[in-house]
Length: 252
Image 1: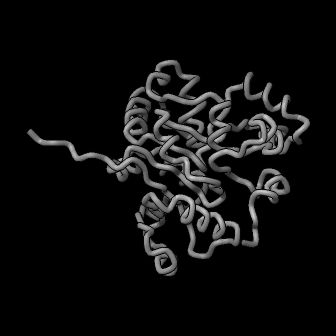
Image 2: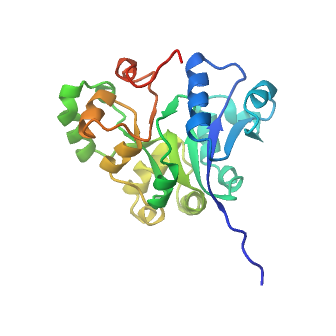
Image 3: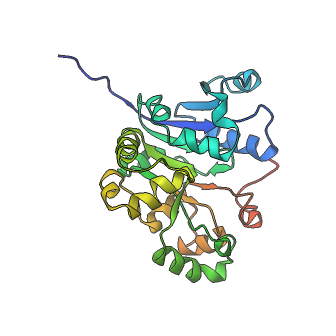
């Protein structure tokens, strides 16, 4: 009888498209390598991209290459993230934390979030520009919208149960047309809209998701969490960077 090899709990997976990083991306990576130093960190990159300098700077990094065609833009990246083969490359782990370099992690709660048993979790977001940068005084507006609309769990900073994603994609690809939109919408909005798919993806409430990550309207979100920062945030330079100046020292 063959004994199944025990999986490691979680890997941090960082997509990198080019060798030259912005100051904010370097800050994001440095914070990740400091706060999440206890976990394997794997750079996902185009096959042709030489990241020797980055490997020299961070010797504990691992590199995993995929075809260059997956890194030509948003659409091609979405194709990678809905590819079963992508997730099969990480089956040594139970979970992956996708950590794009516009994210910023505040403290190590990664094991705790894995223990909650969700299949997918990210910052709750609404595809409506009117909710991009609400002030603190409009927290009730954001709360009402999250409670009444079908929100997206953003994929840029997200925790994913690998075996469940493989199962979900196999079922989806069997019964539904090829997905053409943003990958995170497939794993959150579609997972609640398509009744059969609900069985294959355990998702958090928006209230729980805000404890995991902020994205849009961070000032309003901060009020909804009673001034508690989340595990991490996503797109902090894009949505109200002035709010984040008290928590993220850009020049560190």
